[in-house]
Image 1 (cartoon, rainbow, N blue to C red):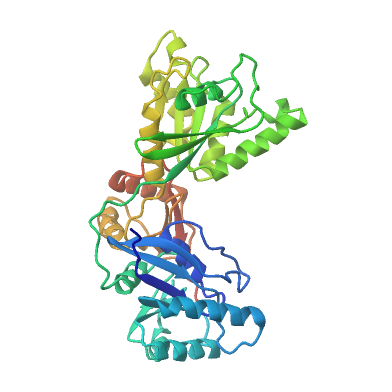
Image 2: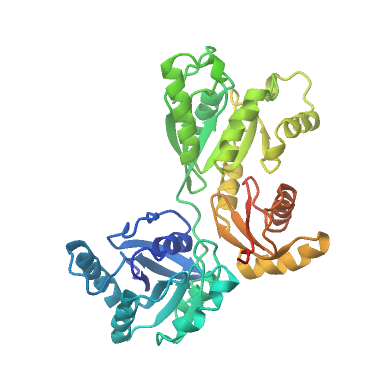
Length: 432
């Protein structure tokens, strides 16, 4: 049985932020985003959900109603098809600029359709821009919202209105269809053996010779209804020891697979403990904003198995990875390998988790009592990694200790196990 979802269509002239808003609502980078006007030309579709209300979201190309050029006229033709079946229309306007003739022409066209329309004034992320909102109310739309798609301001209220009348579904939210997992580490720490243990196959060649794997080897496994796509990358060496061109290319490809992964497994030889290159390799995943799981492999071969001492040593050498869970296992005999599936899924869920602005600011009110912070409020700006923006009362940059404090408090309150948290500051504009 095919279920036809209600449709919410985003329209507006070129370069007002439609694709940024589209990506924000669906929670992934589906539409291309760039400074060049008119990047989106075709209709882009994706399923979305807000407060249990499921709908189809459509991103249209930038519309210029009276433009006779071939591409703009085709964009308008595509947009009309979407608008004809729309349950609700989000009309997006750039709040940083004056209302243009194209905006007014598009407004007239939307008024004639007789469809429910929400006028979303984008890029309103400073008090000085909020003063211009009365101008936009003059366009004749009953529901007008000041938003910032980039900083996730006003989005919840906009979606409340856009999905009004859509019935909530009691079905649980679907988990990930597939999770891409990169296995990284220096040569001969057991990455290929771990892949074989996870997949139950002899997919990767395993030898005592360091650096046997050159190309990335991938394998798909279904566990508890979730598909895991594992990639065993080539061992990453210190730059001084990377001489052969094939090895240099394999390192470049390994870093590429880190960027493409949803979760990264950093394999460390427990017999040798964490060394400097392990910290460097783990840093690649951290810098890429990926959830990290530290794996102490060959644990069965360690003579004195003191987990507490090992953990202290790992945390001391990788202070920036305090959020990363640590798994002790033996890939060779399979001991402890099964725990990785739940850890990977938890990392995936954490990096895609969202907290509403209302929840964040209720939490922030209590946070101010713990530490004197020069912030007015905060909002979540994105996922993968979870990114939060704090709006400051002054024009000074955010001190790293304040950012770390806020990130730790968010993690303690809302979870985000295994995922890095980014905290950015929106500074108060200086008066000229």
